[in-house]
Amino acid sequence: MGTQSFEELWRAADATRRSCVGDCVHLRGLIEISNYCTAQCTYCGIRAPNSLAKRYRMSLEEILPCARLAERLGYGTVVLQGGESAHHLPSDWVRDVLLAIRRETNVAITLSLGERPRDDYKMWFEAGAERYLLRFETSNPQLFANLHPGHPGLSYRLKALGTLREIGFEVGSGIMVGVPGQTWSDWERDIEMFRELDLDMIGVGPFLPHPHTPLGRSVAESAPDGQVPNDVWATLRTIAEARLACPYANIPSTTALAALDKEHGHELGLSRGANVIMPNLTPDKYRRFYEIYPSKASTCEEAEVFDAKLKARILALGRTIGVGAGTSENFNRRR
Image 1 (tube, one colour):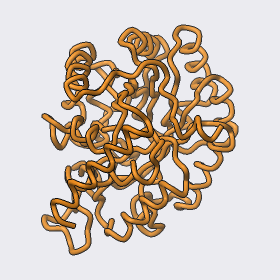
Image 2 (cartoon, rainbow, N blue to C red; image 1 turned 120 degrees about the horizontal axis):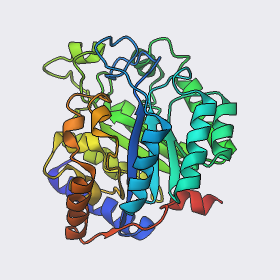
Image 3 (cartoon, helix red, strand yellow; image 1 turned 135 degrees about the vertical axis):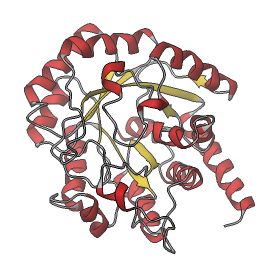
């Protein structure tokens, strides 16, 4: 596909975004509540075998001020993200956090806490969480197995996404772009899976190798033929194709993309089909320890400073700042 063809793709994705979800950019306050994790994912810096990771779990008394800050800054949603650990994030504890945020604020709540039993999902939904993010990472079952040692498999992950949908959540999923072993054939199937899952939210970001992971220690200097690159261009192409595949979904311009292009990453994503940004509200003393990829914390400034700059950049694009929860148009149309 030539340069002109990609320019056409960018225009098509942006036009689809404008006609289907409008010019608003919805801001979600990200709170990384814990980096304890029992999973062994070969790409993630907070994987259980990484003995160099300094572990933490925020207390309720630390989480609530972050939720209040999100509301004060005008964000309609907070995203509670954490490693996958039922021991450090017990279902009842998470429920109590949700109920407290509901009592104290009017923000919507998204969870991203990995795979859990159906009863946990149901408890959290009834306690006030409306959305759940759980990336399937790749549509290739063998590649999924390589990325997730000890996991039951891709079908298990897809079943969890179906369970979340049945309970009533807005469901988000997505992939890493350019993870070693991802071919363009896999990538095409990934885009098709977005459509098949009828996703309400789609999160895509580049694979960024962490040095304390198996993949981070084994990435070849030159990718083999057919390997999807983990660069800005491939990530933007994925965002654009995701918008065309699921025109009414919410799609973030991710922090991982901004890590690759610190000056213009968020704007490039927004101009290729994205309509969401998730500013990081995690307290400084914890933020640097949620290092799922290298130097992640360095992409985030102090919350109020980052907020002011971000909103100015959004307005400079001719876009507007979203107000309210920003429920997925795809979810609204399905109800």
